[in-house]
Length: 169
Image (cartoon, rainbow, N blue to C red):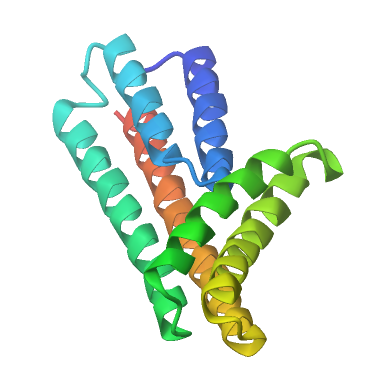
């Protein structure tokens, strides 16, 4: 059985992985890294290589689905490929710039507003049409929101799997 102090450290690492989703970073790989270290600490008895491969598959799947949801949200509202790229870049920048505000919650707000404004600005510059730019921004916002929630849900599942296998055996 895994030491509860080590498990507590894993939980701290895993929560930082969940929080990093907001910034657009692949936080599930932070969770996976914590799971690998926890498995290593326990001699891969509780957290086996098979479990780690399953977690890797979940992390890769979550990244793919997040990307697809972001694109689908933007495409549903007729965003151009350049507007989608603007949404991704501005979403990351907004998340980073928002960190100091509202006790860190500004990162969440900044990431989603960045996605909106990135798509809006690029689409407006390209098309010179405010209505189309607003729709593009809204689609990018919705896609980003859906992708982030999905990736977060997978991250929570990865944490639960790791904890269950750590203490359950």
